[in-house]
Length: 398
Image 1 (cartoon, rainbow, N blue to C red):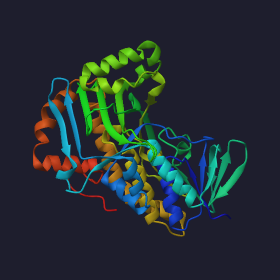
Image 2: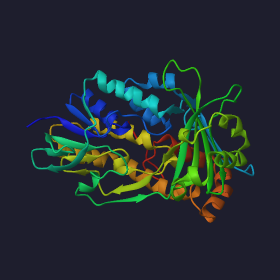
Image 3: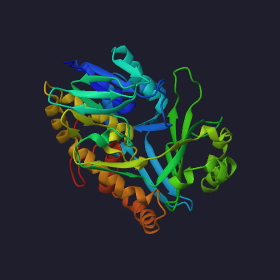
Image 4: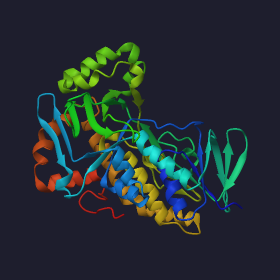
């Protein structure tokens, strides 16, 4: 019986889990359906907790060289009312967020996967699995079957393999998505923090510095996020058109106009869709779900990649001889943290991406002054930093 562990999906969660397990001496095989994996998405915000995981993997210095430090999040309405004004320094003098292009982060992770000699099967799709007391048999798309001691699913919110786990679960496709891109900062364009502009909850534009993809790149990149209902994502290029989309952006936030001069082709924009994933537990015998596959949520809290890195780190901390017990201990270890952020995401997202009227009205009137209260600000930035494990108390310890 082979003692290797199979991981399906080579995104942030899958690659990080492969690295952390290999560093603990576990034999890992990584399966990726795409023949030539490329990072999907634009910019990521790595929180202090995710940065600690990168430090443990020896990758933080590389990330800092490619990314851009973010010390503050500021969001306001089109009328100039401040809604969000959060400073990492008020949470901890040395804390900061790290804006980084997804391609840069994946380059670091995939480079470490290769350095460690992890077996990586590209262009190999896993269509199903069956487990018994001794291991898990994977059914591959070409009809072949391979066996492993255990299986980790890290193939995203819309995973079909997760549905085969004997665990109560439900997935709700989020009715709002976005278009993303990374644009070069034009000459003289001011340095920015994480910047958001809202009109009710039906329009939102976000800007975040994300640095460069490769060390030799000379220009700094800025991630642009534009919120859209999923219904409008379908065929937006024909129905709306790029020029009209850019006009909507500049009408909401005139300061973005110089940045948009380099947006001249709709193909530069990537579409993003999300889902809320809930599971009663994340393990089923010798099978475990991690990352968005286990707890997908909207992007409003900026926790997707962060949670994936933490999942990998916490899983490695539980490594032992009995994989069902390892996975069970992992589920207990992650419960409070993941439950809090799942609940927070569901509660806060309608205030920023929805057709709701009351929720954004309350947001505009209470978030601004409430955020000036020391306790409220401390709790808000602790949530953003990715360390809370409960509404009133509890902090994540890595």
